[in-house]
Amino acid sequence: MKEYLLGIDVGTSALKAAVFDREGRLVDSASVSYPTYYPAPGFAEQEPDDWWRASVQALRTIFSAGKVRPEDIAAVGTDGQGWANVLTDADGQVLARTPIWLDTRSEVIAEEMTEKIGEDAIFQLSGNLLRPSYSTGKLLYTMRFQPELFAQTASVLQSNGFIVKRLTGEDTLDRSQAYGYHFYDMRSGVYDREMAERFGIPLSVLPRLASSSEIVGAVSQEAAEETGLLPGTPVAAGGLDAACATLGAGVIHNGETQEQGGQAGGMSICMDEYHADRALILGAHVVPGKYLLQGGTTGGGGVMRWLTREFGAEGKPEHAVLDEFNRIAEAVPAGSKGLLFLPYMAGERSPIWNPHAKGVYYGLDFSKTKGHFVRAAMEGTAYALQHNLQTAEKAGVFVSELRATGGSANSVLWTQIKADVTGKKILVSGSDTATPLGAAILAGVGCGYYRDFEEAVRQTVRVKRVQEPDETHREAYRHGFGRYIALYEALKGQMQPEDGR
Image (tube, rainbow, N blue to C red; front, side):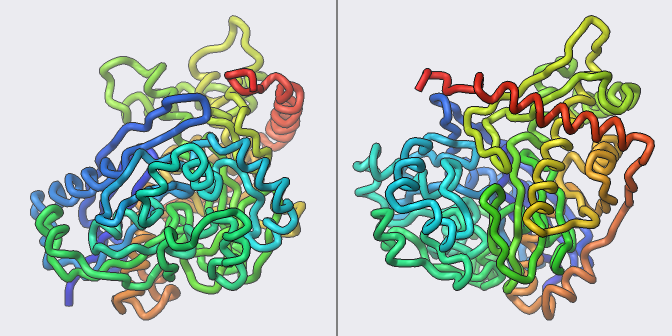
């Protein structure tokens, strides 16, 4: 029997390919970065072909290292960032850069369509309000302002669906990514033709829907020649990166919760039943029959990446800068001596949903050091997480502990700050690889490598450390969180579009 499973993760800053054995142990991996383009206020774009080139390079790197042979791969799973708008023509070629989840260009269109169709009607069907970050608005923007592109469009894909297309030639949309469209009926798991007509969106450009673990095709001869994979290798539909990270953290039962610490921040609460909230995000889990109530923030690990790039020692390796940042931040007391950070570095998603929100440092004086800046950034992203958790609890969905994923979970200090701010115990498993592991598990379940998700999680997910809240910091962070909320309320009137609209 073939030994390994391959997960391909289309992240915001880089693509990671990772190979796992049956017990979920990482055998080998490779990561390739690519740029994001910001051509105008509210715009954030990437080149989908960059994702494919990164996939090819990462797989070639893995196979050339010799630890993994192409014939060892039992199946391939994919995951990716959500809310994209990859336009492809009849030959499968990309027609334009895709707006990614950070893109809010469709703000005016989202407001117009909400008024035309009705907020309640949209929410009742899809479980989500129409916000400019979602795929719906981006597609409407293309139809209105780029009609020549839309006229050439044969299929609109999500990020992991695009990689599946390149690998197999098949057009699919997995149900964990379908929540980006407000004509997707969250309860029944199908497109609603009547709602699509009300939006004016032809369903002919949307791919067929698939379950995330469904084997939707096999590696083609052409893709095999590019990547080194064997032709005929099964490929699963895959899923949303946050949902795959949730699976890779072992969250498959009601009430279990993943804390996300990749480029973005937030949380995903697993639920057995449909439970929507207007301030949060509702999606299907990659595990059939489960829902995810999510909080998604723009400020996560990307905040530290920005600090590292702009304020780290030039020429020093990133890991060395991060080690230094952790050291100097740990020397600063809880609450950063009054320095507050609003982590709204690309507007903000839940629960405030303000595409014009801005990042802010408040409380500067001559006593503040670089360590205060770093710790305040860690605390600000923890406050954003707490804001989402409190919103979920007000909606009647409660969380007792968190399972951390993403690069920020490698920082014991940052994880401890999140535990202290939220008052929740945090469990850390394979933080850096939880997302591609989740994608690999989907492929494993789909091809029969695992009997079911229970068996897969039992075999692959192991907790490496547990961090309990430090009650001596509770009051400092309760006070800090109150100031965090008050600071945004005081400043939001000043957070206006850059072009004055």
